[in-house]
Image 1: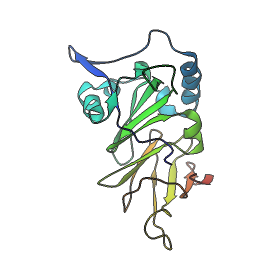
Image 2 (image 1 turned 30 degrees about the vertical axis):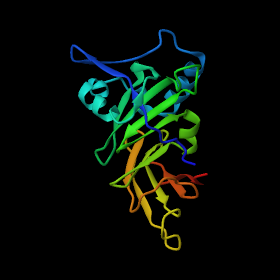
Image 3 (image 1 turned 60 degrees about the vertical axis):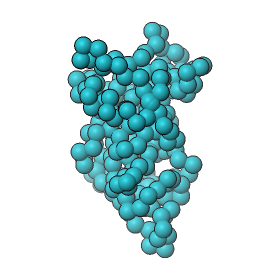
Image 4 (image 1 turned 180 degrees about the horizontal axis):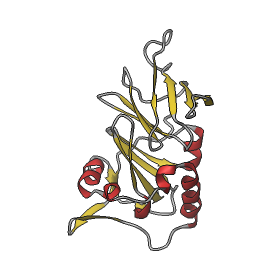
Length: 207
């Protein structure tokens, strides 16, 4: 099972006088207040001031067009990360993950031709916030502060006796990696996180 469920999603984005607007509840729900604090503690990209590029109506609308539905969002926390490979990744905070009831708050992640909802702070800290897309075949991961590089050994691929590995530099808590085959899951794939000095921070196998 993928860590961040890939779903066809569309977030309501409307344009008025050239500005994008996103639906948002008047009062934050308690589950979202708790999750918001946890996400802010894990991701520096969310703690930096919001920029106009984070809410660029043209770019954001184009990124969301294939996906979305009406969810309740925290507009002030939307951020656009730019990976080391130049890919733009939108992190969109979801207060409610369903139209009825509180749902499960977290981040809707849109980028590299894929989308996943909703990544909680706990999943991000555990290394379980990722999506795959293709073609071209790509792997998008969101990682917590302190992870400067990562490496994924693709044992779930077609060459299990000699599995390929992909690696790269993390920027803005995000990384997009080209992978040599279409992948729907990382279950069973070893992952290594490295700090800024190259020290291994964490080694684990995706569940």
